[in-house]
Amino acid sequence: MAKKASSKGSGAREKCILLYSGGLDTSVIVHWLDAKGYDVICVTIDVGQQEDIDFEKKALGSGAKKFIIKDITEDFVVKGVFQCIRAEAKYEGRYLLGTSIARPFMIKALCDVAKAEGTNLIAHGATGKGNDQCRFELAAYALIPGARILAPWRMQEFRELIPGRKEAIAYAAKHNIPIQATAKKPWSTDPNIQHRSHEAGELEDPWYKPRDEMFQLITPPSKAPDKAETVEVEFERGFPVGFNGKRYKPVDLLHKLNEIAGRNGVGIVDMVENRFVGMKSRGVYEAPGATVLFEAHRDLEGLTLDRKVIQIRDALIPTYAQLVYDGFWFSPAKEALDALIERTQETVTGVSRLELYKGSLRTTGRKSPYSLYDESIATMEAGGSYNQDDATGFLRIQGLPTRIQANLRRKMGKQGD
Image (cartoon, rainbow, N blue to C red):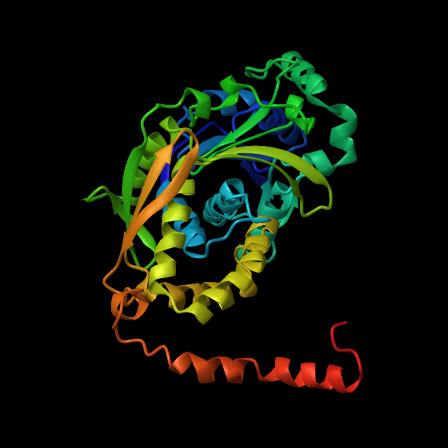
């Protein structure tokens, strides 16, 4: 639902819906599209970035005909962040997909505006080198099959005029475009409620150690409290629903866990990853609350899921994460995997207890009404309901292929090779 919309007079020119961040690139793009003869409608998406995103004056001052804010934070958290936690989806085993998840939800909001405005022409400020162009456009085509997309950074005409950041600043100054940018910035940050993503600038050197002042959500571990903090996270069907004995709405829950985990230095990932377009890139991510939720959820699954179910789901995690990372959020393949995830999460209900301390976290307990753990079977004490004699036949059957192979090697004179 649109939070706010404002406009100024426009003629009969074609409407173009621009995903507008309020930064240098999209501010310049607004002016350029206006000069090309489009009526630009700027749409800024609230994904819980906790920043002032009321860019009405800036957008209209840059050449837009209308400015709209759409708040999709709750959908992003519940249907995006929490769903990927239920899937245990981590790209290349480490990245918690904060940006990757947000992009299709942003484009869905943009496409909703396009439909309401009676156009299929949309634009974005992603470059031809990054992943975001893939996530934006693959989602757009799924939602508006006839979508037409303008990506100025992939257009030679635009790059000849504005080849880089320095020229973009000069262009803005020349045309009185209201921006706040300098020619030199040590890194770039993309925020949402799930994480902060830092890249570019000095971080392009994979050997460079990030500065402490870069972190926005997380206290550097060396400066975190000297006393451990315990958190008990509650889940229902794989969805986080509360912690420390209290229920919270999804957005509030993630905000509060960000605060708790952040002050304890938990949730920093510094990695070199493989982009969909083929190149490697270095990213530094802060995802304190999500890190806690992933760990707590995974541990609870160990208590409540059948072994083979876990094995099958785990085998599909790389595929699921790759689909999300590459931009196939609305694809049939991901929808099919979501159906599997939904089935696996039916019994993932209970509580995991974790201890947070100076950047580390470890699970110290878990409980569930659907626990598959049977103490009378697992006990190492005498008695119990497990008959150890049964293991003899079990192991002979399990070892049958090995024994047959060993006999064959002996017959062929290869014993001991």
